[in-house]
Image (cartoon, rainbow, N blue to C red; front, side, top):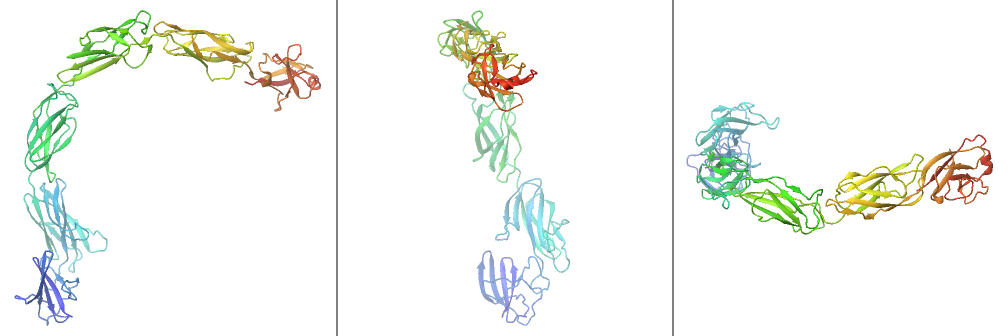
Amino acid sequence: MANECIEIENSTVIIKTGPNQDSLVQEETNPTVITSKQSGRVTIIQEEVDPTLVVDSAVKSIISSDLQQEAIHIYNPGIGSAPGSGDLKAPLFAADVTSSSGIIGDKVWEQDTVPPESSIISAVTDSDDVTVHVFVEGWTSRYTPIVVIDGITVINLAQPTPNIRTYEGSVDTVVTESRDITITSSTGSIDKVYIERAAAGPDVLNIVFGAYPGSQTELKQNDLIPVTISTEPEAVSVTIEAFGASKIQQTLAVVGGIATGNVNISSASGQQSIRVSAVNSLGTQGDDFTSSTLTLNQTYPSINSAIVVYPASQEALKGSETADVTASVTDFTTILYTTSGDLDHQSPTNVYTLTKTVQRINGNYVESGSNYTISANRAANDATTVRNSLVWIANIAPTGAVTIDGNPSSLSSTPAGTNYNIRVTASQVLNSVPSMVADLGTFDGSFVGSGKVYTDSLLIEDSTLRGIGTFSNLSMTGLSNLVGTVITSGSSYEVAGFPLRQLTVPAYSQTVAIGTSVGNFNQTRFRYAGTSEWLTRRTNTSNFVKGFTITDSAGNYDPNGNYAFITDLAFANSNSSGTLKVDIEEQT
């Protein structure tokens, strides 16, 4: 089997073959070329060598050959000794180039490495300060190699993988002009990376603003004004800072040395510039450029809140009544007064008057929104202020709905009396508190509230008659002094029932006063105190064990009476001490 060695010279690989496995391969001055082949960027030449020499023991690398040789040993004179010297050198690679103060771009990497981008060939920087990173293997002469980058010894070599003799490290160096950075190892290996020193960032040459919007002579916040920015040819974009006249930062593309766009005006005032810088393809930014000034003015017309004066004692208009609307306006060039279809107003509508008179011409009730508008404009910066106001209209009388808080099915009583909150909700805002009458129960005072909602307390006592009651005589005065009397809902209510109460039955008596009359006999329940069993309701007073009925004071059956009657005569007679207690209630 033939013996081979690969020697790398520039871009030529010379494969030298011998007839036996123990031959030492050596370079011949005028080799006899057996065959040659172009492979990527490398030319492969096969030649014969002296078969009597012994192979160096350091030859270890074996790769597959396109020339179908059984074993190919690789020597690299660029990073080690020539084949046959007996000192094969360890691999050394420039791994990357970075910068903490500038931009590194346009990196060129050795192709087809695993992983990709592991060995850098060249890069471009816009900073003098760069960091060159290295990957190196140790070799036979010492465990850890000594690596020098650009004449500076690497002192931060570290093993990325423990117990594997590969090392990574870096050196900070200065590159003021384009040049090669040389990396050497104590094993004799050498590599280089080319650093191209980029020029300074591109300059902005000029900034020209377009016309102010419309007929404006001043600019206000959020106005847009066209801008054209000229740059040096290498610029790819410009950045307008959020500074001075510019509200926001924005980036514009540069085409042929020109960038165009709009400046969004800031909230600043007075004479204000914008500040711009250009950037090249590497990302290097040129010097700031400040434009000529723009005139900014954030003054808007001022319109005070309108004060509406209605006819005497009124807070709204009815019929064809009029009201005076007063509002002062300053810092304006033009003004316009407008109303909705409910009002007519004093002319001319484009002449400022501190007080305008308006008249109702339509609408029955208007309490919200706006129907009177003042719009003022300041021409210099086209700033407009709009103030909406409301003139109330109440051309119809209010109506009211009555509700009882808690919405009880009926109003029950207690010995001390029970208060129920009666609520009147008007269809309009009222000018004064309403009044109303209840035919069962007693209102304890005048209504209280505001706007549309007013309440009063209705007292239901044991002495209050049971049955259906009615609210009546409602009187509500609207804002235009129209009086409403109509109750739209809730005019009737029921007084019935009483909550559970405990009574003491006199000695030897079958009757005991309830304290109030019964409204609904079938909703009445009766039991002996301390028990859970309700007695049977009876419609007569005949003797019946565990029964009761309702009577008048004479003991006659009366389903709406005010006495409870024990139908069990023997049980009643056993109450010799007069301490028998009973529970009774009329459920609602």
